[in-house]
Length: 340
Image 1 (cartoon, rainbow, N blue to C red):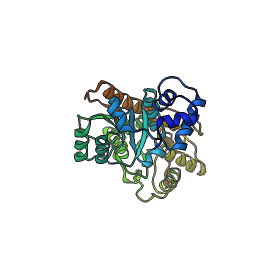
Image 2: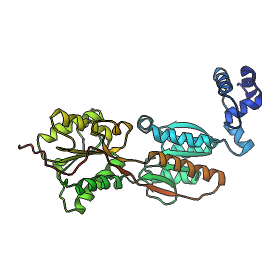
Image 3: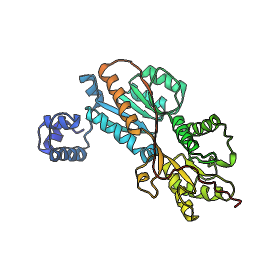
Image 4: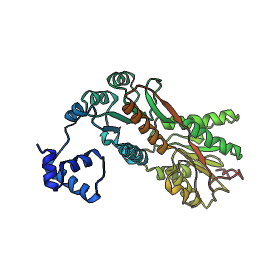
């Protein structure tokens, strides 16, 4: 097995330099870091985390637990978390598709100083086991109803409520609601916010306007929005469209334009997520911004503080989404009616 001395010899640098680069401490050039990393890869060198913990009381390593879906669709959340942890002297390992029970085993193995868990599945017995193993973990999102765990989550109900209330304020009472094709806790909460806002204003919801997408699983989100818009406009009347994802809204906008209709004069559209293209499409999309970056930074900060202070102070934070107003939304002019 290769040692740190072997790496130093291969890279033609001192052992101290290799140590600084591995632990991300002190000063070193990018060129030197590249040489050391190439030597590490060539020799197959890995740090002995157990020995390191016995010597220093810490591994300086955080496990970021997520699933493959989140790697593709929550890149900002993940990258912000990693940057925050690295800037505070920790290394990060991506741990894919682990249950909360398996996370407890990771703690027992002594491999990580802490865990940042994205959307941990609700499992009370496994969560209890994880708490008993170690309290140095933070849950980012997930439907967790406990007060004894570190939790940073998004108030998706508030997002659905804010979007619907804005539409109602502008005179829209028939709002086509298009839900993402993957049902989950966030989608349920956005829908609940939509229905609550309607009920609050004495507006009865219509099954024809509430699209849960159980029959569209093979479509992309853009195609989903496009298809449902075309089908809905042929069978019911509405003056606005609220989607649970900006990408769905992009498809809706394309479908509206193909029908020769104007946005927002004929139909208003509001999305969810504030993806970067949303400010640049025509017309720019009104949307709900989800504070993913703030969520990641706050979660990492809570974890870092727990590790450094070696305390068991628990923090639970719910972050509220924000309405971003752009040109795809206006006061109601008329309703698009399939009977006309």
